[in-house]
Image (cartoon, rainbow, N blue to C red; front, side, top):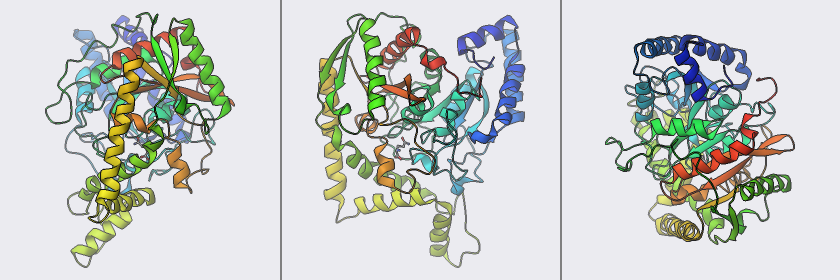
Length: 483
Ligand code: GLN
């Protein structure tokens, strides 16, 4: 059961081959068997089985949706009413949200079953899932390596078949990078496509939620449920949501693919480069035309991001003050002591580093030199995408410079860690959508191919991913021990 696609499961549920309760129980058993991965922070057995039971009734009475009865899991950054939401932090270790995030609400309405809440880097800051208060997540392909981050629990759970699909969020690569390192499909939608209401904010102008699944068809199904205007999120965009499955089988003949030369230079591991070349060649066989393009400002993305993201996070995280909710230090002597010790004890090292960088960049004396400058670079990077996407339909490139690295290998060196997002960050600065799809293996570990499209072209990206998955079966490979 756990290797089926969502469409196959929906069929099995309707034909009475198995019930949602049986399906859910099978996943709960697998989650128990594979606790060594540390993919989940919270597993809600009782609630999941209750939801499965309700789904079975809905399936029997008619009017089910495609996701009715299908077990998925939520990154622990999405607020869930009645179920703990930690955001991977000690600060929220005891936090139970009084409401559901819009995304969670939408899955509830579709009748999907929520297995639990997935591990992540603290407040989504990280590229390895090692900054979580709940410990590192292990990559099912090699448990000595990281699954990537910050949606590391989501990627590991989907790759190890501990959920059919999962949600992730992507501020600078956190859906695509872990998807690449764990050999699954991840989609970061256009900024504004998916509501951020109830999704704990890291950097509000960059954060975007999206699906993480084994294949593109499942991603289309999940995105269908997640996307759409939400009056509770003023940055969500009021545009109709297309039928994401309708165009999956469109031909790719004549598709123009651009390969930015800046993506294939120094720094890209040569085995990864060879694997990507083979994947791109597959597109040539599918009728696509490949062109080299140039995006001269891409090299400015990391420095600009590490001003903008910390600046926004320093403002967003000021709400965690020990007063209203979350961690509070013991026996404060006065208000200042309450603030400083609650924040000092509640936040981990990386989060504090970001807050320090952000407040520095926003301080009166440095605002023009750093923040304004970074915003100007952001504009230049958006222009690069605009120019490139005027010449070609989509851009392709690597997701990560290397395959999964060792647990402990980079955590002591923030700059090196930041560089693991070198190919993903520019996309968030521009706000365009992008996917990572499994494109083969290098040194026995998964490699992701990145596909970047124009604003709101998620349907085209899914079509391009799905067509590849009809001729290459990397997304069907199963890590050993998780069959
Ligand atoms: N690794 C990047 C960071 O730490 C991106 C994280 C993300 O996309 N949430 O900021």
